[in-house]
Amino acid sequence: MSSRRWRGRDARMTDEQVDMLVARDRAAIAAVLDRELSTQAGLARIYAAHGLPAPPGQEEAGLARPAADDGGELQAVCDQIAMLETTLAHASRPEAPSGQAGMYLSAASRFLYELRSGLAERTMTAADASRLLTSVRHDFDEAERTLRGEQRLPVGPGVLARLGELRDLVGDLSGQLPALDQDVMRLFGHSDDPASVPLPLH
Image (tube, rainbow, N blue to C red; front, side, top):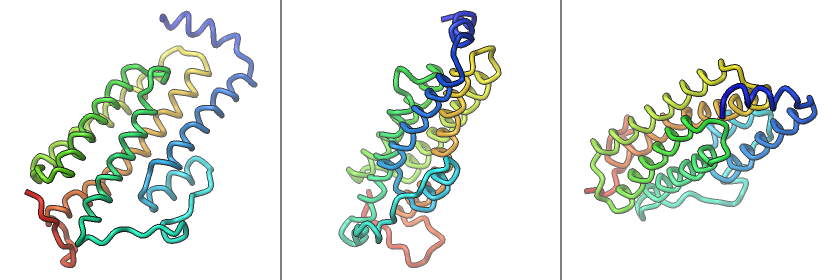
């Protein structure tokens, strides 16, 4: 669809319709964040940025993290990766405002799936895990760059607002990667914390 057709359609949108589009996408993003992101510090920052109340922590919700000596730490990392995958599935859905950015987000989701599968099967090496995380980071950067460029195009206010919401979400997900990187490397015994006990990965 040409930019002229987009512009023509959105030029007839009322302010109320634009507000409804923005509110709908914001609510959808909030719902995914509520379900899928597990790092409490990251959650607090993301929810504050979106003007939303943060969900209760694990202790307040009555949830306890499994002990590392029974594989709980590995499971917790795999769960965190799966949550990011689900969030990316929402962000790259066909009706998302940017097909090209969605392509990068879909690629990031595939890399995360490969990482999670290798960790769960205990066949992943530290080098391969680092390579996959680097690929995810690259795809997030490319998606952000694509969205930034598309925001400069002559599109209508409704599309522009949705591009902005998706760009915000990509930025929030990118912010989760440093903590995930540390958690994954800790599984291989790569940690500044001397109390960390590596799991028996091969």
